[in-house]
Length: 140
Image (cartoon, rainbow, N blue to C red; front, side, top):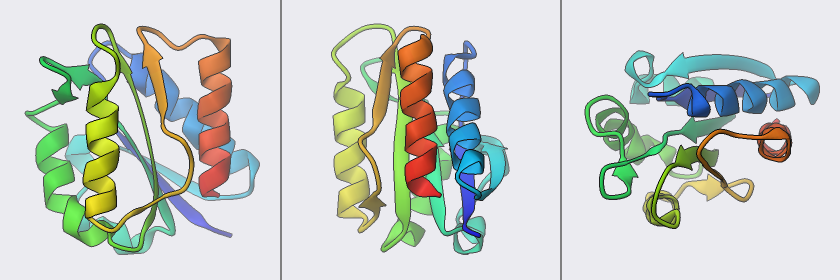
């Protein structure tokens, strides 16, 4: 059985709903899933998991949330080399550039993106929740 972590930050609940669906999808495929908020995760936990899904909405000028999520992710980044990961998040403006930048940052760290990232404009609907479940299943 694979061990999957779902790590997220959510300000409005949109990314939290996505995280719940990612976790559900991984569990449906038989994975042991642990869900963490950004403040409860660190690089020391990375080796405990076979795969990790990270979720964060776009903030400000299409960047990761900078008080909790980005500091955690920056600290964790070096430990992601060779690790199977997936990304998800929501945005309310722009065109999702934060996700493309984040994907490139992960590739540069040597992480393996296991599935296409899921980006949602505003709140996730049925189709986006389904995509999140599929993302979780891809990590399991």
